[in-house]
Image (cartoon, rainbow, N blue to C red; front, top):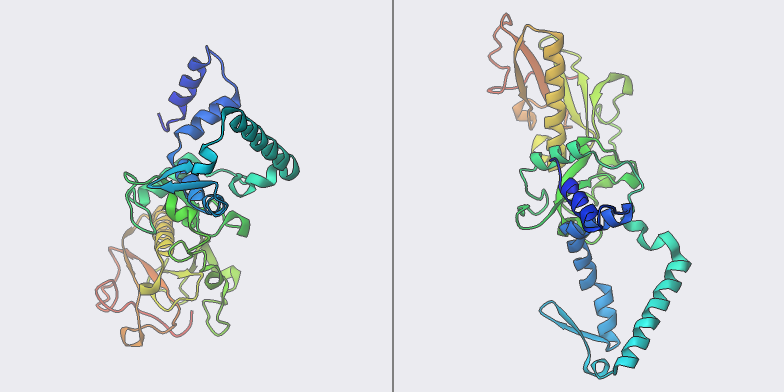
Length: 312
């Protein structure tokens, strides 16, 4: 069993006497989805509550919502008439707006595959990557860092695990979820050689990083992994960029090992600051394959200064 869907589907069909419509099955999935309930709990606390309180229709305390005393005094006929009026207003609004009502929740793009969702949650170690809360306390959702509406892909590097609260609040507080950082991903320093890399230099990439071959390699296969965002050094990377770096690094290591069975290890690291040997002030991480026959380089590797050149 890879998810809750199968037993929910069977239970719904059994409860229907041996048959159920697609809508009935989908409704059972929705009823079991705590993240959806938490999303609409946030909606409930917002403008509908504030508007109805302002008009003296409801009051609430400790999560309990009640009609005000004036409306509580209605008789059964008046209550029925008001329920019918609510139904009529709802039907009229739906007929007027149609699918625009729920468009903000619609899934108009390719869904994220279940295996990819699992990888995102596994990488996050079951915790929200924004606030750190455990999935045992609040449901986690898989979120696009660069939204689908902004051409963000389903690539693993563009996905992060957010709790339902952080995900629901993205429009209000754009910090750790990187909504406010979209401009930073797009900005380029025209004087920076890594910001202006020709596409022909790129040998591998994901949503947030690119990889090129070092023009002055220490060993054959020496790669540089470079964030798309103009950032000074590795200490200033954001968490999704760190995730993307690890993923791209792992992919390149697999490819290099597959192409050269003599590779027995790697030097992986970067320099931060001129005194540490950094020559281009745009973060770049060296991936240097090592073979048993390589000459020892006392200043290479993770214990010393990663060798750099003035031009790449």
